[in-house]
Image 1 (cartoon, helix red, strand yellow):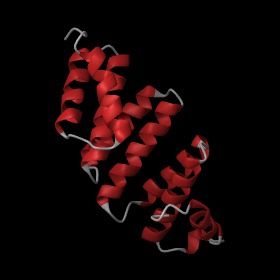
Image 2 (spheres, rainbow, N blue to C red; image 1 turned 135 degrees about the vertical axis):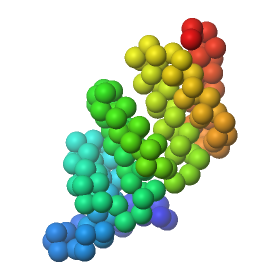
Image 3 (cartoon, rainbow, N blue to C red; image 1 turned 180 degrees about the vertical axis):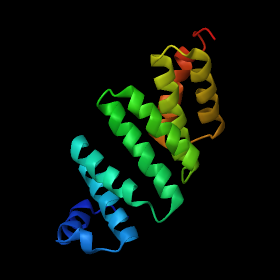
Image 4 (spheres, helix red, strand yellow; image 1 turned 60 degrees about the horizontal axis):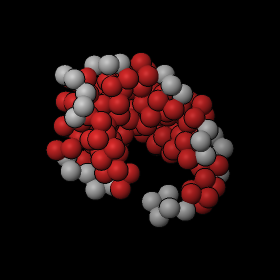
Length: 156
C-alpha cells in the first residue's frame, strides 16, 4: 500500500478470511486499511463501516486515530452530513494529526463548514490556522488560494 500498489494491497486484505481472529491492534489496522481502499473506490458507506470498526477497536498509534477521524469527517461531508462531519473533524484535531498537511486539511474543512453555518469569525480563524501551517500539497495550496479570494469579503 505504501508503494501505491493498491491492487496487491487489496489482494492481501482479501486473503484474510477471519479478521476476528487477528490480535486487536492488527484487526483495527485491517479495518482501517479496508476502509481506505473502499474510500478510494468511492464506496463511502463501506468505507465508513470499516473505519468505524477500526476506531471502535482503538488505534495502536494515537496519530492514526486522528487521521481516521479526519477521514470519517470527509466521508460525512461527501454525504452532506455536515453536523457529523464537524464532530469527527473536531475530534481529529483534538486527538492530533500526524503532519502539517493533515492539520491544514482539517482546518480548511472546518473553515468551509463554518462558512456554510454562517459563523464567519470561526471560519476566518480556521483559515488562518491552515495558512500558518504552510502546506505544500498542491490540492491544499489550491484550496487556500480559492478560499483566500472570498474570505477577505466576508464580515466578521
